[in-house]
Length: 250
Image (cartoon, helix red, strand yellow):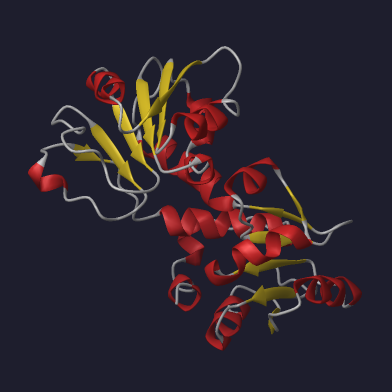
């Protein structure tokens, strides 16, 4: 990958992150946090190509940029491009889709149940609907939140808004193949040995249920590759990013 002569801003990251990214040929610069709009103006004036946004700053940056559809739905921004007006994305969602595709999981004709707390965290998994599922259940703490999330699914997909407290959620789970947990705990007894689970919370003990899971170990690398593509317009293979990931994960 050729070296870039245009700086990349790091918002909220520790100093080692900039040094690590320079090993990739990127001119990475830590910038202050605080007045987000002033930071955006300064980055544009200094001709930064884009920015990576630390988890601690992602909510604050949303109102300082033009978010894409995914960032708006999730309510967070993790990468920004300064080509034209500052526009942001939330790369984790597409990285999750990349991860499920790479796993070889048979999505076409399958049914999936997304379980979260509200429309924001459920939006993390909505792009999975592009992979050929026929039925998708969307369970939130309240039925209105589930209905809000379902409105963002593609037309023509059989989608079922559910309250995670309603017995109907258990009924849909019994015919689902894949369960995706985006937030909150799994309702008791929901997951069975025939299910495959994607756990974005990292809190589920699968040994008790006997269910299988999708390997998410490379999800952070795929996310970083997506972030850099948005912020720098350069494509990195996830394997290239493995040496630098620890410096960006603190």
